[in-house]
Length: 328
Image 1 (cartoon, helix red, strand yellow):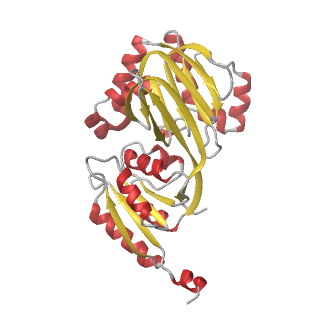
Image 2 (tube, helix red, strand yellow; image 1 turned 120 degrees about the vertical axis):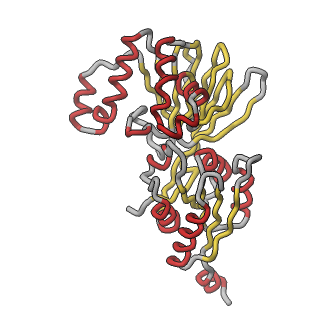
Image 3 (cartoon, one colour; image 1 turned 90 degrees about the horizontal axis):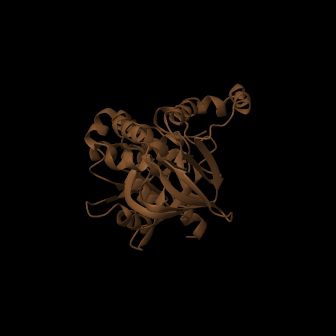
């Protein structure tokens, strides 16, 4: 049999990486089997994550099986681990969203809270190349490590919310659970000293309250935090909040509330050009961003706390991932 005939007759096969604590296994297995039968796929190989692994080992085993598609079913941590392993591999990734935020899935228009549609998109969607962020975390003791992030890395208020919000309450009432840490942070207005640099530009000293670096710019409920952030433009976008008091927080609140109107409509862009930009909030864009702090600061990656750092070096890998998205 020639190589062309053999390749044409070979059935496509998926590998499914699943966190069994986040997904109803029976429902997922039924949905995957239905798509395999519909599209003439061979039976998938299944790889479960374990309590002592963040998902990387399961993803590495899945990738080693040479699949045509890797379906990732689990929380944000499982998806982030998969992204770190599969960056640059060219293997298509189907995402089965699970959890409270699902910002990455929402940014790409993936089905959320609909298992059947999510699995159908994974098997029969279009391939879209997207960027992946990397953060090299430098600890106070001199240790360093690099971790991937899909959506945002945050320092200050953003990281404090991730680390100190009651997780059971967050699961019950969603983002309303953040109201207490936000209120405490605003009332205390705790700021920190830092230096930052963009690409090959010289470092700048600043006193700030919150720094967020995004691969995409939207939050839950459609709030647009970083207007110019695009998930496939090969750039990272940063927002620095540096209010000096209640008036500064008011300006930030208005800006965030109306960002989507100001940046996504023609009339809004016209109004934005006439409106003075608030000094309490700054935006920047670069391929690499380095930040160093006078004292250790908490950091979060995609909403998960990652301890304290004395410095962070952030970079973006353009078109590192291939994600299955809804057709059209």
